Image 1 (tube, one colour):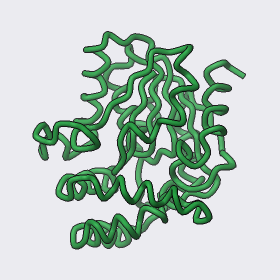
Image 2 (image 1 turned 30 degrees about the vertical axis):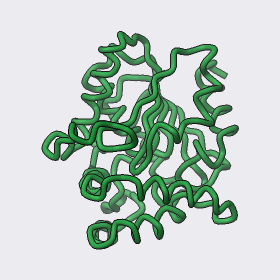
Image 3 (image 1 turned 135 degrees about the horizontal axis):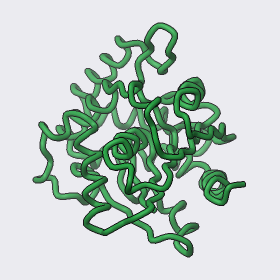
Length: 247
């Protein structure tokens, strides 16, 4: 069971989730190149200019560890990395859990991604001009759960620890990606976990993905915000366990 973290985070974001599955699965945790305790010198602006570079890393980790029948759990942008990886190497995967996913953050005619293009441009410009200020302001908004300040503080600290130039590049790769075209060809059984109130990935996104992905199940959680792995671990564990056990 491989866990992949989202933008501005690291593997520590899964600390409340993965222990629940240790008895049943071999657990694989990692930091994306450019995040957490990874080797920053290995970061390639060319390779990571699109999500395919990260998807190939996921496949490489699985191959090196000789992982078979993998359950992949990806949060936010890593959910889409996982989908790309299943398209490239479906033989490695048994199922894929998509936590707060979005194939595109930009509204497009009938598609509701959550943001107009000018809003994404403003977000990226703000990050470009003031990485620390952006991190301190945006992290609590992304986390939601304003009554639990410690959650927003944790995400802020995680954002702030990320190398500013890598954060800016990863943000562009994340927020300008449009991978709606791969949804209909998804071959691997999947669970879409969507929070009931998420400013980054609205409920409409989960419904859109579910309609297009032929082997998917959608669960709208009571949890709010974009990081249920931190804000609602019990509900997240319960939803994943129910799906894996076929109930």
